[in-house]
Length: 323
Ligand SMILES: [Cu+2]
Image (cartoon, rainbow, N blue to C red; front, side):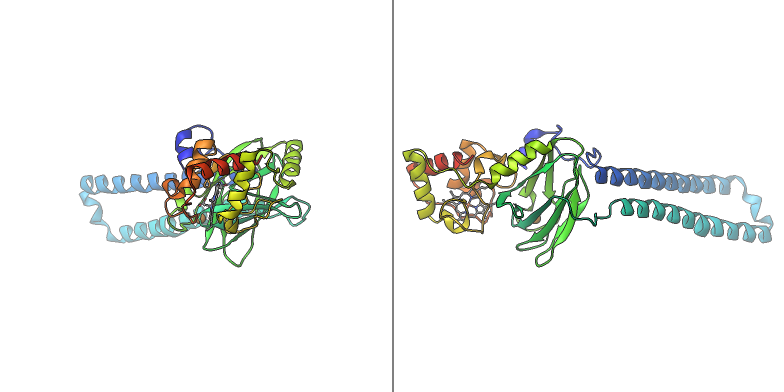
């Protein structure tokens, strides 16, 4: 959130009215059609009301022919109350159905599949069969339709990348399929769109669309285990990580750390943010997060660590080396 606020109203703020993918474009167009029709009906009804108000004042004699008034009244009810609304509803239904058909999930399964699991309050991202696991950051090849298998580890969350598509729920014990496609390479912010507890608002993620070749390189790098410590301080950092309980919750592939309650940290140094979009990933924020996650994200399910200043420095040095 803070990252988003800093970004202000620049390109990185997600915007429903700035579609960057086929699905979002369809939804956007449908939205404008419905908005236009709604506005037209509203203006028309208001015009009739005004007309009725003034007519009544000027033409006090119109009750002269009660028979004619009854016929006129019936006609207004038939047209204004039944026929015209029915036509409008059928037309909007037609547009909606058309968009729904276009948004159908593809049936052939030769597409890239990414598993996303919602946690309070972050996203686990797994590339199946690839040993590649990350968090709060989803790389996809630009210009390709990518399928998602969405589920939740705790409560119901909702997966939403406003510039690419509508929302889809993540439900415990169930897998929902979704698709995303980005026209162009870029960063597209996503968020949880279903209230899921205290830090619901700090449950962001970013979809990073890159050209296919770059994506393959990225995936290959993610598949690698963590780099081994190369200096005394990073070695000390790894030892502390394993001894001080961090490894109970976090995995770093290639080390003994294999916890699964928190994000996989194997390639933490490459991530854009910490705490699911709470703060930018840099040295100061990393140290701040480990010393006191609740200072940055109150209620976060990571406990405050009791590391000494020196221990903290080693752990930060080690995690920063995890490219
Ligand atoms: Cu959530």
